[in-house]
Image (cartoon, rainbow, N blue to C red; front, side, top):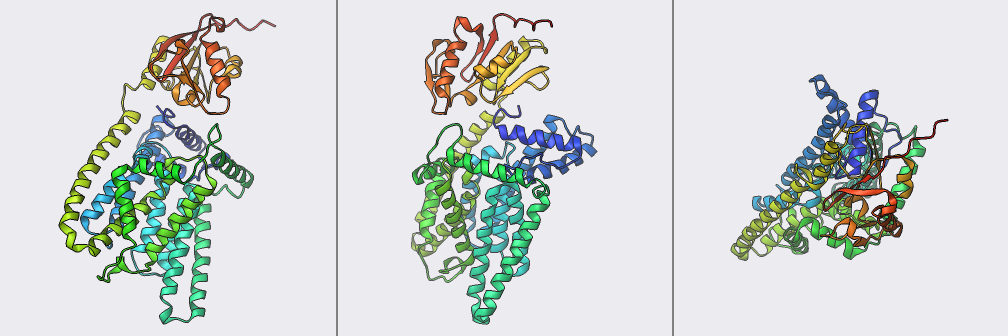
Length: 497
């Protein structure tokens, strides 16, 4: 079932399998993401191999990579909860931890191979390291190691440097009472050099081929930049409203509203004089600056808006929201009973959201009888292993079911004519952004909904041709998301020379 939900997962598992077979960690020119996830999976599979597992088997590799993502998700929840111990009361910690755990993007990508949950864990642990004790070079060094690892998992980890720079500079400036201005500047510069050296060293340690394959790295970074700025298969446009709607839908209205109220609470002050009420706290300020800079980059340069691009920001926004909520309780302590009753209601509403997100994730990942899987099993049981099959990305075919199967991103005239295929499998995940049947209709009804991707008109023409009599193809299986075509007549054999 690898690749049914994410093409990135199929690519990552393929790279790790190649690494296992070659006993190498060469990314083979792939630098769209960092190689930390692949590296961890490689060594985990070496250990599994020592236990007798087949290290290069797809199911074993998928287990290893998904396990890393799941552990990263659970680790983030633990780190988030523990980081709030010095800032909030226990019930606020649990309330916001539950909100983070029920975030749709985190729940989904914790079950699929992708570096987002790993990166979010590493960035937040770098922040937790800084916020959990007194400022010092040893603490800054550890945070720089985690920061370098986050960049080694995904390029947006570069923004963690903003986190470190802000925290270190503010802590030094606040400590000027015991040092001269010149000494403060020198300490800030020393910290900057230390972070730069450690960050770069750690990044190169988990991505050692970057320097020898710099052209590949630069090309992939340029592609990612242009891809995010343009869109996936079509020109996309994003603005502040689009991003906020994504964030709101990702968190769910209860958690999002609670977070916004808490962020507003950061502006209030009480007379308790504890750490969370200081006008300028290095950790609070660092988290704010990090969110502003990272989100500003998305807002100004990324038009392909996706909720997972906010995953490294969400824990920080919820942290700030939790601290702000605690601040509101301190400021309006006379209303404690009202706030307590309200929090109970919020917790119950959040639990309902958790159940909904969990059921949706189960439906996408773990249901044995999903339409995509049912279609793949039908094809496998109705055609011999020698059948020439072409299938679109996100389609499912049981591993090893066909000796001559070909995957294509999107099926069209040119692709279909290149091979002598007997079976063609189309699915909505790959085709809907071009053209697909409307809900409740059959493909043969020709009641299509034209997508907005570049080439949508050509895709609709191809689909109309495919169901016409002159095409030589017929529909043999169909459900809401998959249509299977079979060639009416076997392809003519190649002429004998």
